[in-house]
Image (cartoon, rainbow, N blue to C red; front, side, top):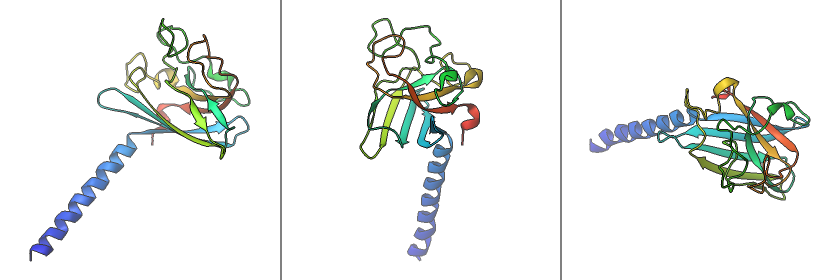
Length: 181
């Protein structure tokens, strides 16, 4: 008799756990990223914690081997082949470029480069407290029509204004509220 009672309880616990995991996944904003030729370059997932920390998870593919800068750009535009329509780095506080810049950095500057392996794939996770998806926040990446996530051809030197010597833009994804899944 105990076994029969325990089985439904275990099922209920498992179902609630699965439901909770699905609800958390729905809170993420998932952005497809394309190369300048339109090839699938992977995706970026954005999730804001209750503490206000934004986690950006990159899963990239079909990109050249090596270190690449990743930035958030000011406009929600990915116009191949050069992606110039995305504008400069997201910079609501009018600061200079580079995480290592003593005068402060653009909000669109991410804290590290991404390494793409010989198989042309790479992953990275960034946790930042200076970007937001909160309505009304000055650093909201969804405000004013959104922003873009950009992969550059070279690594960011983390200090040279305005772009960190990161080179051309090679992959892009549009970040908007309608990207939410």
